[in-house]
Image (cartoon, rainbow, N blue to C red; front, side):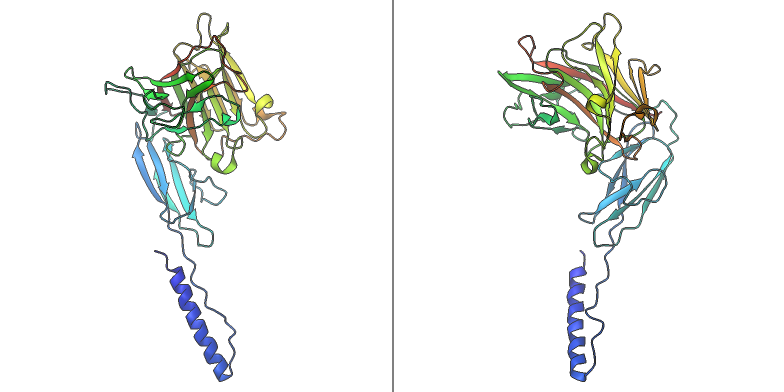
Length: 381
């Protein structure tokens, strides 16, 4: 419990006594009320949870209500210009985490520090969700990893669906017919439904606030639905979206496509940030080999390094595009590369229906349709 209020009251009482004595004796009161000592914010507590192969998931907490935690992972002293802690983040390389907390009007905390020396070899699997299910019934995706965006506000793209979370009873969601579940087949299912004409439901799962990562090779094995109006995607956003908003937080689109299959069929790998979105965004099409479509099992991956983001389909040794800073931003007025800010990113997988890019479903669009995910995996660079 803080004692500032008690000290303030005591100071005022002493000041009144000094004032009364001074006036009565002909003296002066030049000091005014006594100022209570400034409280110091509690230092953040750092805790870890084991991931894989020696990697750890780091969480930072403060017992000072309302405090903001700033942190660094390069050993430097954190300041208010450092990343703000928003979610647990994966540590899979040798580094030092430093963190401190601030609260307006109080003295900043001391710095909490912890060195990590996992010495993990390049190419090592350090985190995954395999979507295993041995229960004999469809089950909830891991709630310690996955949360949900919900509602039908169009999500900035004029999408048509209502996104539903596990167990949601908000109309038109149906808890008996979930839009996201881990099936007995061991796959994550994200299902687009049309419960009534012109009404659509689906799911948009995210790790925001629960898990995040930075620098490494991220991939997912996905079977994408194809049909007019479908917009499946596997992508990331920076944790700092809560403070700098989009697109300054950065967006990495690993798997994204719309509508029915084409010949050749395709996937697009994109990056977005301040000064490169929409028509001036950085996007590249990957064309599948003859006879293959997105409606089949493919591994979609991203290799994220300092100064670069590369994308591949099925073969991590052969990226089809690599975006670099500053090379890829050349000629883009006001473009700012957001992927080396020190912030980690959270994962999103969703199946949208309609919107500015795919437009509306039509009479040939088949409902329900499922986006299937066999696994999501993260490897060291």
